[in-house]
Image 1 (cartoon, rainbow, N blue to C red):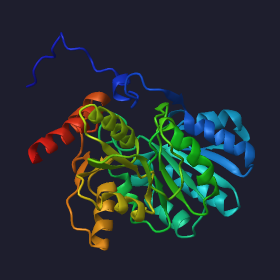
Image 2: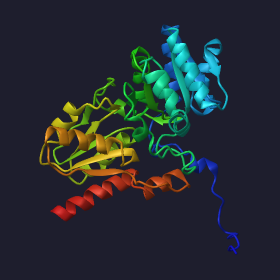
Image 3: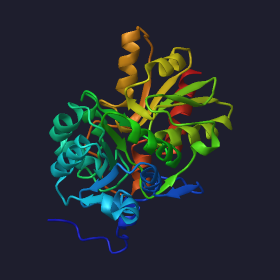
Image 4: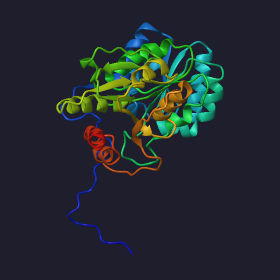
Length: 336
């Protein structure tokens, strides 16, 4: 027997479950991936777009409207989407295939592996809802997508921070000779890297913000949170360095390890389970170089996560700016 519903409880609106990842007051750009793809397609007639019935929800609809003759709607069949994209690449086209991360990684792995990665075809898989960018629970939260794909040979994995990253990444992805997987930020996407001396470079990590007290090694939207947390920590005299890993694979060990082989506390920040993602990429690189020191992961736990309002979930699982600030301050107090 279940309790009667609380008549005073407000129903959870779906908008709260797909809320923007932008913090209040942040500048945003609408559909930066779609707009960047349109711009790239104007300069490269070989670029085509495909979707598995989710063009509107992956910002591919912007491309479809601009180039209807170069857009292909494959229906709810992710395996067919990947096979078609691979076939187009085999003929010399440059496909960008979009769907949700859970569908591409969990349903179509074998097709990505054998039809794209093994022959090293230039297919660019661009997937929305990576990690916890939706509140719709485990069926839509691709918290393990990087872990699934990191072991695949020849595949480049991109985890952009914001609209700036996406805008600069698209033409480089189109020019890359092998397959790529990009964790898409969709809709109203924040732009924070404009405030720093930053340019996206495929395969490279970048020191976005210097700092003498703490090092943040971050990827994806957690670089945005790392930068915001660094600004907040600076108000109390704690200077945090932020190293942004927009490319997860291949991993730029030289840049990252040169910044963490110091006496400063090191944190990895990722919108992904701490199993198989950025944290373990950093830890593995350290072990291979013989660097024996502690790093603390800030990321999602190794479990199926709750559904709910996205801002609430980010607080609950430690991805919010306030959570990052609290984690660092608490650790520094314990070691003072």
